[in-house]
Length: 115
Image (cartoon, rainbow, N blue to C red):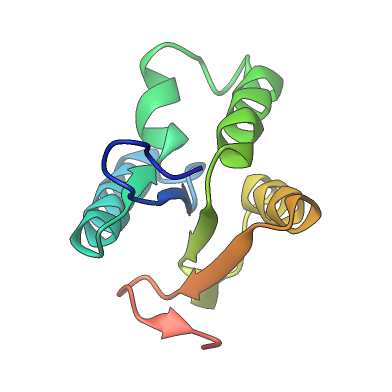
């Protein structure tokens, strides 16, 4: 749902979190900045939720919250497609498809793939 005041689209940033979390968080920051530069409002739960949710013990809760935010977004942008998708990313992509949301695919270098 577009922001009522600015008219900007909300874009869910879908990228890896698990594994090398420090590196993956840095990438999520880059992807979020990329979305801002394209006039959208990025929603990147993996930059927010780790502040107060422990992935190791609260994975199910984290995914429930992720998907609740995803449903409120206009589009889902998937990054790092050349490296495959994680289980979490797969769940997000499936949810976006079920919700009829627009899905766009990007490489790690923020080049659109499958356009």
